[in-house]
Length: 289
Length: 318
Image (tube, rainbow over all chains, first blue to last red; front, side, top):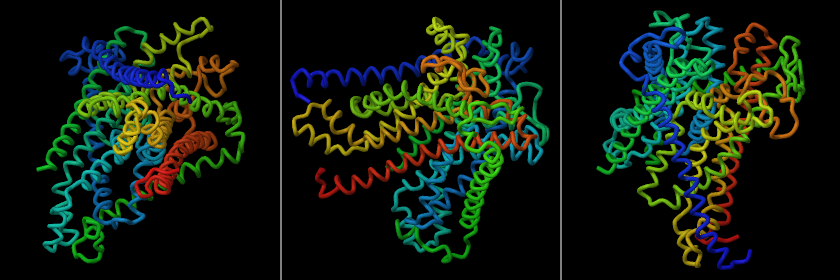
């Protein structure tokens, strides 16, 4: 390669031009997506839309039970994910030895679980809950599946936060002669739980938008209100509603309804992400004090 | 902290919290293993039935017990490669933009905005693809006698948007982990700031950037809903047109769109049919596993090279 002045100038001005262009494309893409969702959806956004039941196969009416169904799924997901992630976090930092191979196994396993396609959770849930247990479509099965799906997100956030705690607190606790059990209860958990909560909101934001895991297991398009039992108690859900509406989106009223649903879902997801982000920022701030 | 955490389990009396945790983790790991064994075990009959033709057969008619998964494998690889072809040329310069060009206080903001892309649910990407992207693809390529905008290309394009943030943030992390001294040394040798990026930062971050691309591929292969909505209704056959662009413009099918379709309900009653569906799940798992193994090997290899050649006396050799 000849290092002429022209070539060096080409690098000096060409590289930043390309990179700025690419970066701006990425940023503009997200702004365009969000504004499309907002502009298309905000017509539908009125009290009636949130409070009424949907009618005429989603063409008119609101999305009351879709919102309720998604909230039911979110609560069940949280209930399933919290104990498991707590157990993984405690095991990871307090039970396993610092340099043990098992720590790498746990970390690797979580990474693997994190990169599993969500449809596989749906298929396995269908096999286990819907068919083998004979639950049919059930909100509980959907919540458990979604909960397992977000376990890596929640527990990795929890573990990372635990490991970033200032070591002097631990040293002080051990210096006072506390047993590992006492250290767990008096140092790890009181200082570590905000990491769990932040990870939980991150995971729930992902769970509430997922369609594939609840496709066969929990969601139906119409004909479900509040679930009254466990077996054959499906729920309506925002992402599944959009999924069905997108497949026959030729009726303009149905399309408007789908966009409105999309806006509600995006606002919920962003709100949950926002809570997670704020908590994480607070944590980082708190560490220096 | 090292030695404190290593205090033996037996030394304390009330261990129940830690005991329950450890047991729960063991149970969970066992369940995950059982799920894997189940998928392998359930897919055995179809391999006995079709043999290697499960991977090479290009026809899937379950009524005739004909299970060739090639159309779905081809579809999955085609949409993922289209996605990578479109996303990588934007994602890598964008990661240079966030990691090297932007002032530090703007970096986290820009990265956060790009990561917002990853937070949008895939069904909403699907909706946008159905309403807009599908029409654009149709208008753009209608001279080629398209019947609809549903195609492998459309699915690949929407996937490109979805994996863009994944690749960008991971590549950004890789670039940011290049030590600052390396850049200073390069500047000291008279390279201008952009040459420093091209000849120092990028080569050193290359393994990390490669991993980012591979993980993006894994994400693309596993995505279901957005692909399902725009990939079209071709079922059980390879695209019948020749030529790369032509076959990409045809409708297709991916592993995930087959698994996410109504055929799963139908398959459950029939042992062989269900086994074929589990075979598809296994192929999907193998593709994901392949990408994870590639990333792990890259990480270990680059750590080894770093240890062997770079970290010797803090001097760059080789």
